[in-house]
Length: 422
Ligand code: DSN
Image (cartoon, rainbow, N blue to C red; front, top):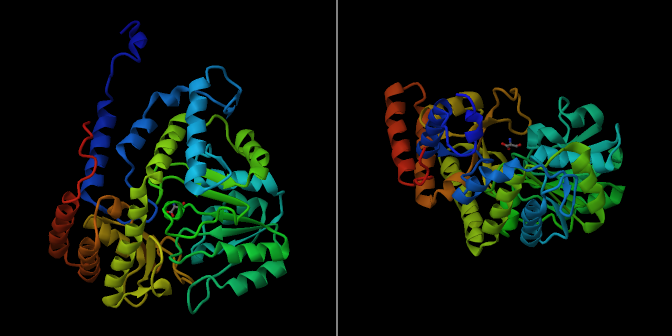
């Protein structure tokens, strides 16, 4: 209709096709059991800020020093996010603009490294992350990557071995951080090694950021030169990245984020990050993070007691890896079977895995989302039994269908997003 564009912001013309897809995703999130270690359910207030008019504003630069006019309100958003983040993590400087964890990492690389400089990071197969040196990632293309593995016996980081490799490689940067490591990472030991060889230390706390904020995992702040994180995993905020460091690095890092690796910040996401930090500053967040670990240990024990081998023998954090070698099923087949009954997790390589990353010998199980739903030890017992039953009866369609009903029933007992109306 002529001139209808003028009503663009005044009448809500719903996109029926998208609404229908959104409704399906809402139903999925309400009816499945999410055990993906890197996922969570954000609060309604976080969702509200992500879907807010803050998205309309360009704000290249930093509070008080923008390239666009009209930024006075937006400055308040970012200043509040920075203040809350520094309070939460006890940091003297942070940058809340990275669009993601990989963006945060990339900014650190740009700020201190030159092409072909050496990085020492955890082997991907042992729990590391793509952005720490995978050959198809920017890091693998532009830097000289050395890796450390976990000890083949204990499957935990062998700090003496890291030290040995660091002395041989003489890296400019050491990365401490992982996406599928179930044990506490000792940042102080990494600091000693970095100091020994004159390297910078970067802690990528994407997975454990919430646990650190809740005080149930040792912090890297004040120990590592740079700490990068995501805000959407255990921290339970919007999808996004974050950098924390000593104030002396502020100029270097700010320049590396903008204009170094990003353009305009996503102000609606920064607004949602600010809400997330406030929520994590609430004393109840400590209880939440303690409960994540309690649930992780409980679910791990159910699997272990049933004879499944747990990588490293257990867990200290929000996740653990189950080694399916000898169970006659690959990680790929296990995750597909479990998805068919509504239990959502991911296949995962295990240390020294002989199978490729698309098949894998393991599955990764994490408890941040089910803990947000309010589930506890009793539910972990049930979920563990459901997983074991599904894996043992994977060829029995009737048994799986019946189990699928039980999974739905359990999820329905812990409803999420009941206020969302589409
Ligand atoms: N994709 C994330 C994870 O699942 O651990 C890491 O980036």
